Length: 86
Image (cartoon, rainbow, N blue to C red; front, side, top):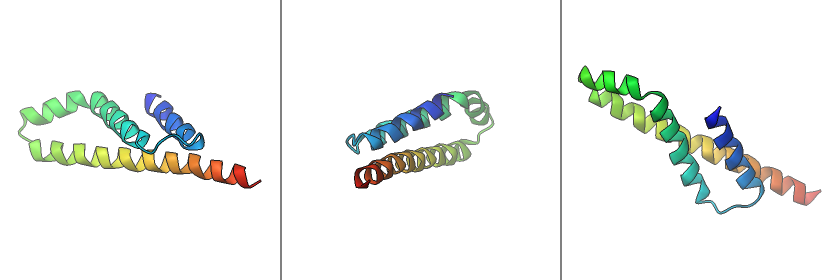
């Protein structure tokens, strides 16, 4: 539920024309939530010597969080643009 709230907030930030650096904060928040949810799995994988897989997973998580943040902010900005034209 917390990632959904974060995405809604970033969409509203796009709607309200907040500065674009808010995307970085949302990316960090989403990646941190993902890490917190899977922390036990990362520890198990570290014990098994799978550090490369963990690193790739964390990088993919950050990229996915960035994509979600940009898309949500973009949708909010698009709604702002559409509402100003009507």
